[in-house]
Length: 497
Image (cartoon, rainbow, N blue to C red; front, side, top):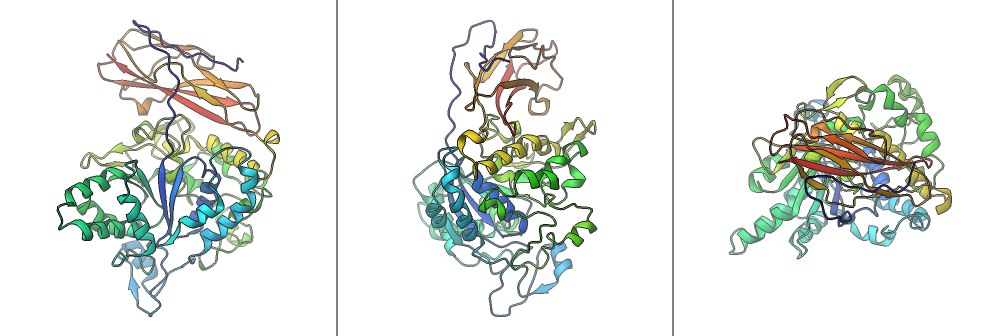
């Protein structure tokens, strides 16, 4: 198989060749309640911290975790399921406000090796400088400014107009407090319309469920033009319920033997990653019993099985692997696929009606827009784990895939489109190619027939029934032959003329 693939799109007029544009690193702030799946998500986040621009790491609360005010004040959740489960409490399963620093210390031990494999890894000192304590006393508490909310506020008000992706791993309350503080400062001033627009244009919330009521009660009614990416279904393929969601054929990637081989004994950072039956106990959370092998057996889990990283899709979305989903999350990518809300143009959602065809069950599946990427995601994770302990030449690195022409094309019904491109591998491995139509991402409702999709060149005819304005999404997978095999992509979007 040739390592270099030329991309050409043969239409009625010739196209001007171009290289694939470089996508700037996204600015992002993490807010977290410190549950075990947040901790494991944080480990993976640190492995990928060279791929985006972290500007804040903030402790927050949620319906599942809060510190209490230290005065014995009793609290009952406003979320019905949590109120029924826990009743009135003075605190709830609080993991403290030092665990992120302890994991940054672990990161510091592998940082010298990581940076030999890729540029852009932030220094441990820089990461420590980002950590703030937000609104943690109770679920949904947003009555007072905190160091965390003030940090978010200052970034939303700074003079950098680039988007700020607000990852909500727990409750939305610390972000809500930052927005409330901005409103209180400017609402009765002549600056308010401009400030409100500035913040609304910058802030993008990626939320995994509503884990308190502050988005619905405050953010949505008071900041209706803040963009929201809301993941309510697809994250389960990467969370606690994965055995019910992930097809049997893909479950080996989340199994104990896989993690035993690919993450354990890979340095200090991965040593802090929690797995079923690992004998570990998360401080402050008596309900983290996953490390107990007897408990694992109750749930039919084997030693070292994956527990959960339910919040990882929030930063998977920011990793530029060539799928272009940050342009529009409706395109689908490592962070899932969402569609614009029919009632709110600033909100994108998944849900039971946002499905991809699952080839294993042969049914449409609400989790499959996330599940479909598990092999690539896990192999990539395994490679990053290797980067913690191996020299450059002993580890694998992803291929680089580029296009020689614009990624957005136009063609008429009946026209033949031919695609070619180029890929190189930094380790000298052979690269294998596979072209496929991401049918659900496009608006043309049918399938196109690809000639020789596993070859360097592929062609297809625009179907005769394709209507003007409809789109067809073609994905090029480029997978190297290293170990673990790593995949990167390019996407060509053809619009029917």
